[in-house]
Length: 345
Image 1 (cartoon, rainbow, N blue to C red):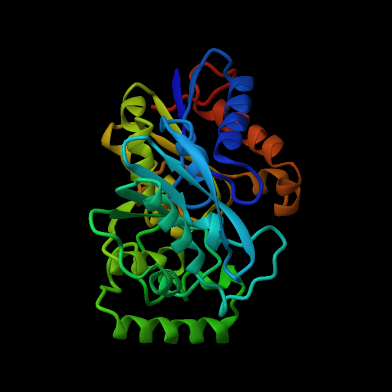
Image 2 (cartoon, one colour; image 1 turned 45 degrees about the vertical axis):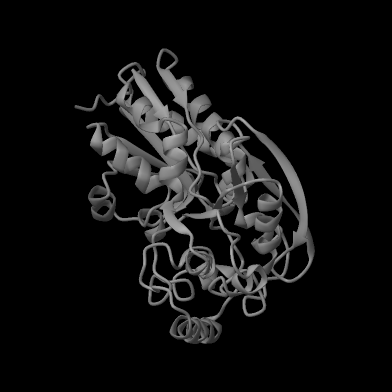
């Protein structure tokens, strides 16, 4: 049996490559004769450049810039040598581990420095991975700091979700709570985004406008073309062709929730599996997606490491080990070569 293992990062615990390795290790314990094709993925959020570094022939350089609260940080530029530069907004707009979150003050201004550095180095196409930010400023900091994009330079916003700027699934109401905003702060942030959208000539309802705390909206104001980050990465790694040669697709991420189905790695991978008539299974750290939601997205099953381990804390304490255990259990269900496997039609 041939299995494609194509996960995103497990935020805060495992990179996409580490997650893929853990799943492969556990799977082969149950089904050692299976051929497991490991394909780490990203949706444009944290780990975007790590994944692309494995498939884009080019070199990385570093740029000194500022983080969301004006603190000095270092961000990377991956240049392919043919005029395209890849950037990761999470590197300069995301919070460092343990850093206090201040959602009202968090700004995307530091990204402008990285964009300018990429252009100064000769890039005429700048692809920004949008996601994993601590910001909810609608991209206003970046727009104000960058000003006009130089003539002849094309911006691409590779967003991690297809959410709009405003509303229940938007930048503030949908994502600000995980960035440290309480209910009152969420309301204030939503009002600020509404004011920004009313004053700016963009489309707040456009897919991806709400990504990165509205950075997707800001980049589109600067003339960026919006694409799905997960689809862009999947194309670069040749995911569809690899799925076509497989019997089963296994994907995953740290938390599989409603946002996972709005353009993230899990949804994009399941979509491509469906196109090729292949079953798709999700292995997550935590999961809150129901069976009906999953089925509508082309996902056959969703499994949680936290459930297997008995708690979120136990899962996080040994993320690779628990993910491998979960993969071993799922392999016994799905693999034709596993002892006591539950053979699937």
